[in-house]
Image 1 (cartoon, one colour):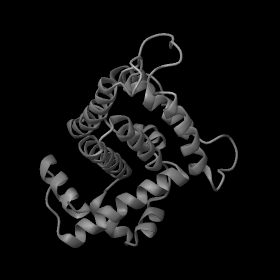
Image 2 (image 1 turned 90 degrees about the vertical axis):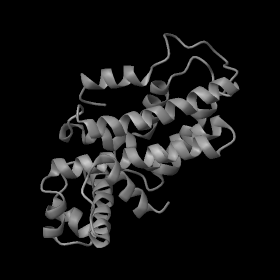
Image 3 (image 1 turned 180 degrees about the vertical axis):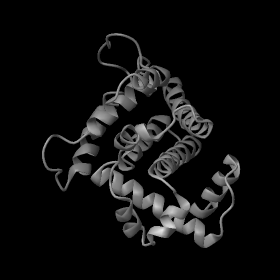
Length: 226
């Protein structure tokens, strides 16, 4: 399925109005440009800069997204949709579940998920049905991969999805100072070391209990830095 077909299908599932092909392309360019700009400059980046990056006029941007909240919401929905689609594809197509998990985690880092979602949290209503549905779809796919890997015996049993997402987000966070040119390469190197530590059999006993996605969502609901 093409990206355009995927977005059209997403619009159909969520009840959003269908757009002409050129309008759909403009909307997708704006969302992609916003995702990049949010990561580079922060959530307060000028919308004019996003329009410039997308190659559209300001009027086109505001026609699709009347305010920053709607644009931020669309970016998060696009990130969730991309990650869920990748996780579902990896689960179906990659023979070894641990390899599928590794690809999903590395993909989340490439998509700057750990930086984007907390950054845009103030612009979102976490109880909105469409956002909840998108998050549930992603959670379900990730948890299915983890359960399969544990059933296969390749992933240690004392690990939950929340543990993996928490550490991956911390690894992806840049150190203080200027962002080095090879930041992503360094992150993937550290991330692979972490993933290797998740393989079974475990070499140590972890304190506490596995962190679930429900634990992670609950903790983030009362914090401002996650």
